[in-house]
Structures are given as C-alpha cells and as structure tokens.
Amino acid sequence: MEFRPCIDIHNGKVKQIVGGSLNDESDYAKENFVSEMEAADYAALYRKKGLRGGHIILLNAADSSYYKADLAQAEKALAAWPDALQIGGGVTVDNAVAFLNMGASHVIVTSYVFAGGEIHFDRLERLAEQIGKKHLVLDLSCRIRDGKYYVVTDRWQKFTTQVLDGSLIQTLSGYCDEFLVHAVNVEGTGTGVDEELLQLLAVKCPVPITYAGGISSIEDIEKIDKIGRGNINFTVGSALDLFGGSLPFDKICQNVTLQHEK
Image (cartoon, rainbow, N blue to C red; front, side, top):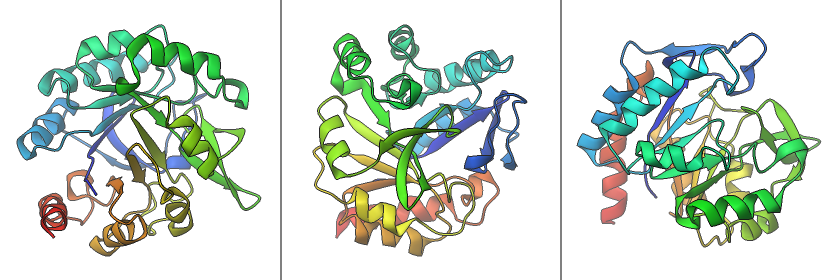
C-alpha cells in the first residue's frame, strides 16, 4: 500500500471540493478548502517526501474560461517534480503527448475513452499505442445507482452504462499501467471509506489501483490496507491538514512507512 498525494485544481486554484457538486455550466463546485499555496508548492513538498505517483486533476472542462489557469498551475507543478506526477482532466489522444512532454509521468483518462456513456476500445487502443501502456492511467471513478457502481465521466457528472466490476478491471488492465478510482458518493465528505467498493477493488489485479473518497482517519487507511490486503493504494484530500483537515500529513507518511517495514 502506498500513499499517493493529490493536487486538485479548479478555477485556477488548488482546492478540495465535494465530489458530486461539480457543475460545468457555472464552473461551480462546493468547496471544502481553497489553498493560498500554488500547485508547485505542493509538488515540491511531495518531492521532498519522495511521494511519487500523485495525481494532478484539472477540474474545469477544457472549454471553460478557467481551464488555461488550471493548466498554468499544473505546468508549474510538473516542472517542480518532472516524471513523478500524473495528470488528468481533458486528456485525449490529441494532447496526451503534450502532457507527458510537460513532465507528467502518466496521463489519466476517463471521458475520452468512455465517450457517450460507452467504452470506445478503438480510442483506448490508439491512446495506448501512441503513448505506451506504461504512461496511461484509467480513471474508473464511480457513483452508485440502483445498487451498482457505474463509471462516471465529465468530472463525475455523467453516468455511463458501464458497471464497475472485476471483469471490467481485468479487461482494462491490459491497456493501462494503473487505475484511479474515486468513490464519488463519499468523495470530499469525510464520512469514511466505501467498504463495499473496496471489496470490489480487492480483486486480483495485475496493475496498481489507487482509491480515493471519504478518508477521515488513520483507521480508514488501515481499513483500506486490510480490505485490499495491502494491494490498494490511497489518496487523501479534504481530511488532510495540508487542505484544512485534521489528519497530519507527516503522520500518514510515517504510517505507510511502518506498513512497508512490517
């Protein structure tokens, strides 16, 4: 289990938001925290701690008037620690190489592959062929509907017809280096992890999976470790003291180090 840090950028600012509150039409999101620090400051901190594999997420739509400001923040963060951070938000086959050239280790993709609510394997194959499987992370963030987890796109606003299950994970693992999964129903709420989703993700998977959503305590992190049998990585947002919460960043780093030493 690894701690994967995050840098979420919305309207040109590093923020933590309630996951299901995004609205592209008004560039609105319910905010838990708006940082006075720049994205590059967080990247430099993660570099100091040696926390590779963190993700930068551009939360505005690519046609938003704020997207350029998001991108400017992201570029500085990638420059602060080249080839160590992943980036997602508006990634397509047309710009994936440009993001890697900015210094991203991986690009994170959802909407381009799940366009119109369906998986487009032709797009996935072109993307994997263009940048290589080793540079691709698939975002399988999901929301609950009718008792099932459905992959959601467009910054978690649109349901696809694709149910997230073990079969999907096994199939898609052949095209990517990692998965990123936000439990959108609890994302940004600090109400605890989605244990049912974690059980689903605990299937035998040949690539790493990073879970996000609802983490509010060290006990939650220990649940991820137990349910995932040490194979599911995690990220913490609003609950972290770096983003106005009460969970000490240094304590989490130390806790994960101790887990590795066991």
